[in-house]
Amino acid sequence: MRIVLGKEQIESAFKKKVEILSNQRILSCYQCGKCSAGCPIGYEMDYLPNKIIRMLQLGMTDDVMKSKTPWLCASCQTCTTRCPREIDVARVMDAIRIIAQVENRSPVKEIPIFNQIFLKSVEFTGRVFEVGVIGAYNFFSLNPFKDIPLGIKMFLKGKLSLMPHSAGNLRGLFKRVREKEKRSAVSDQLL
Amino acid sequence: MYKVAYFPGCSLSSTAKEYGMSTELICKDLGIELVKIQDWSCCGATTAHITSELMAAALPAKNLLWAEKQSLPICSPCSACFSRLKLADIDMKRDARLRADVTEVMGEEYKGTIEILHLWQVIQKYGELKPKKELKGLKVASYYGCLLTRPTEVCPDERIEDPQFLDNLVISLGASPVKWSYKTECCGAAFSLTKTDIVHKLSGEILKDAREADADYIIVACPLCHSNLDARQEEMGLDFRIPVLYFTQLIGLALGYGYSELGMMKHFVQAKGLLNSKGLL
Ligand code: SF4
Ligand code: SF4
Image (cartoon, rainbow over all chains, first blue to last red; front, side, top):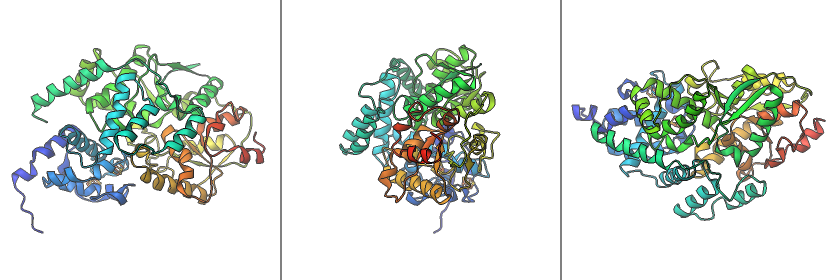
């Protein structure tokens, strides 16, 4: 397939956002494939990590946003550690996920749901309240009985508590972070 | 006495209670004083860094600030917490703007003057380890996983593709480390609840490789790795079982502590039979 590259592809706004958020230079990738060779989740991905980087170079915003790859990234840091161009690929995956969640364009539903529930628990109790997080996640991901036998065994071993252990809430901090992010996003025309 | 601010992390009061129990027990013997961080709060774990850059730095910063005010180094026994604390510190040092934003939302500035360590580093650097018992005849697979050594900046002194410190610890306790290929492979931690099939595959392969290397036990230094390798082991359809211990429990055994003091009955795959047969209990 012949692809004509113009300025708008190479300097796509999306690529720029990813570069700013991840603090990486996407164009320095020379497509050696080492990131993908070591990726433990490659077998499940629709595009391997090096392809995602290439697609960003080519300004293929929609294809990157629709890809499941960033959502399957386990943040294991293997790619980041091995890249000969010192690109922090794991952080590029983070940036794509952040943008997709802000723009509400994530192609998978369960992981953003889990994130939100997890962070709500932190916002309200300062820590993670496992039973609450698992229960709420199962409820919202429409899989109410997932991991129940495991949970019961954990409970019997004294590993799960039915009441949250609170460290005081972090609502003030969460509010300030949200406000700060809104202000900087507007001033940078990022989001 | 070596004093360090102690960040246990959320798992240590729930799924990894035994990691906390064994850590507190052995640190006393090793001359390490763990100073609990007052009202420590979650580091953001696997979720903050894929949701918001500022949140991913601010959550750890809250705890770093406390330690900095006491002029204490900070340590966590959880690889994921350690990684988030350390990466937040590195990011705030590298990115002046992020640091200013964190200062604004926290209302005070983190200066970045303290050392951030994983528990094993504290034990290796400052612990006075005097084993009372030799763990002879024990074949141990040391599992490092991802976040204990990667990326390079979090653990600059190690051989990143083939780390040795846990293996060296095993030797110093009189046991034998096995050679195996999966010591730094990913267990799928972030997906324990959301993509459990990935965990079954990745963790299953780690267990199989340890088995092929003829290990009696696997040791780990992270509660997320532990719950994937131990609590989910029986979901994987394997025709063997291999007990997974925290490295602190292995040290505890060598220091003469008992099975229940070290919280070992809390594991899903019990280690008792094997330990008894080797005369170690
Ligand atoms: S390892 Fe680095 S240079 Fe090689 S393809 Fe991946 S991102 Fe590009
Ligand atoms: S960090 Fe993500 S993309 Fe990189 S090797 Fe690990 S799972 Fe693959």
